[in-house]
Length: 154
Image 1 (cartoon, rainbow, N blue to C red):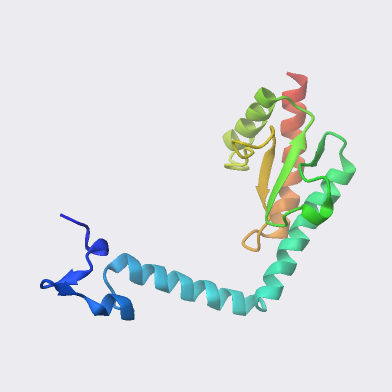
Image 2 (cartoon, rainbow, N blue to C red):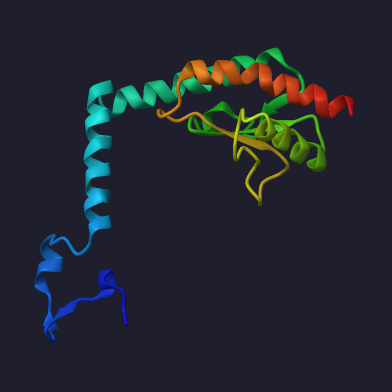
């Protein structure tokens, strides 16, 4: 049997209600409520421009950190091509060392899923989107230094 979400007929006829926004399952209503919550949250912060500003301020935390440390750099060398959400960084470490770096931070429950994209050069990526607080990124930076020093001295 086909899952209900894929059924477009009812009693042998096309169910036109599907094309008019009819609820076809509970998860679809949950998704709608999540979307409404996201829109309300966006409005509460000041709209899309406020979310963009927050993301750019978050990127600023990492820009400052990179400027202060010679062992870390942006994968995108040109600031005009840098994302302010999924920030990709290279380290003065080889691929295996970067895996250890990532594992250390995960073991300490400091950062999860920060390994670089599979097809990218060895790197890390840090989410700086508007759902992240600037203070959390500021708290992360000393941990990045700690993990780097642990791996580099091993």
